[in-house]
Amino acid sequence: QVQLVESGGGLVKPGGSLRLSCAASGFTFSDYYMSWIRQAPGKGLEWVSYISSSSSYTNYADSVKGRFTISRDNAKNSLYLQMNSLRAEDTAVYYCARSIAVAGTDDYWGQGTLVTVSS
Amino acid sequence: DIVMTQTPLSSPVTLGQPASISCRSSQSLVHSDGNTYLSWLQQRPGQPPRLLIYKISNRFSGVPDRFSGSGAGTDFTLKISRVEAEDVGVYYCTQATQFPYTFGQGTKLEIK
Image (cartoon, rainbow over all chains, first blue to last red; front, side, top):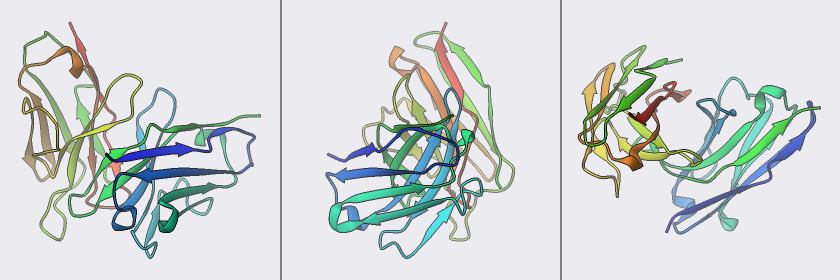
């Protein structure tokens, strides 16, 4: 069955960096686009970033552009999100999700990893 | 950015009764390829979001048939024919027609 397991979250000071990982299993990872979506505590969902299956295409929300970098390693079935220059407003649960381009949706989501940016 | 507006934001429903959630987009969600990339997600308390409906009305694998989606252009609806206790949670509409992908504010479904 499809499994997505995020890791790498934690407490970081403003201006700091963190790298999130998402380990995928149960499907052919290299066939799928992938996304990161976040959810601030008690708030709604915010799309963060998107990467094509071959890494040739990426896209970012304006709120993270220039600070976050999405990447993937198809040999390791893993998705990453490098987060630099973190701000308090980046505090959220970060979900990775499998994207189905032809359906225009994310069909499977991980459990999420909490990132807290605070001094 | 496309703004997604859901109504109501809270919906108390009696078990066994129907429920309906509306979602309106600030511009048409019809993509240049002819598809409309409007999806509905369910987030139960303490859980990650789960896909219910994609491309307006396509039920995802394993989703009970009491859930249905409809609409076109800028106006969309999620209907639950008979609410069950396990349906409690927050429901989001989301669009993937245009970057940045955006979500509605969420509608909290609770039992009366």
